[in-house]
Image (cartoon, rainbow, N blue to C red):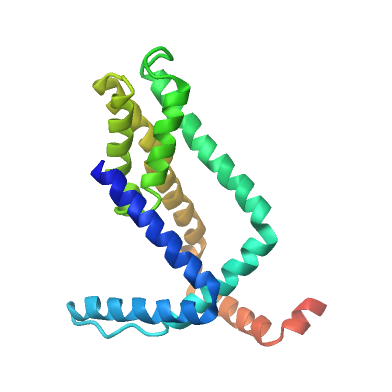
Amino acid sequence: MVAALVGIAGLLAAIVVFALMLRSEEQARRFGLLAARVASRLVRLVRRPPVAGWELATVNFRDRTIDLVGHRWIAITVWSLVSHLSLYAVLLVALRDVGVSEAEVGWAEVLAVFAFARLVTAIPLTPGGAGFVEGVLFTGLVGAGGDQAQMAAAVLVYRALTWALPILVGIGCYLWWRRRSWTTAPQDRAARGRDQATVTANPHRQAKG
């Protein structure tokens, strides 16, 4: 209950702040200044210089968000729904794979627990919701009538597939993407840098070519 209340309170606060930021450019600038002051006080504890330019970043974020939602709101809605349903399907398959039958915890109950977990973890209190998501899912599924051992196993399998595995895949993709720059000779990197600088300085010439 405490975790749910904290998650819902954080979600509501984020919605209010987000709505005010989108309301006007001046509001976005004020929130940027306020966040910069708070961050500057925190970094001062570790003897770091105060942050700057956050008001410009929030205003830029507001402009980009309005433009993106205005032109792509249908695609954003559809793919967000696909993402949520895909995660729910993984959780349901994990439950059935460890031996939790439909009679023990039905698909509708799993959906209710999953939706509740997504709601209370909308504001990540830990990186990727680590520990927090697992606790909410486990508590909800056990409350729905599942065996504790099976619920724990299913939640761990679900998180391994939807959280740990993408991180490992991302690391592998990053290393593959960076390998050319690591294996390229210094003179080749310098030549590419000069070519890129030429393209940046003469975009019309590049388009013509």
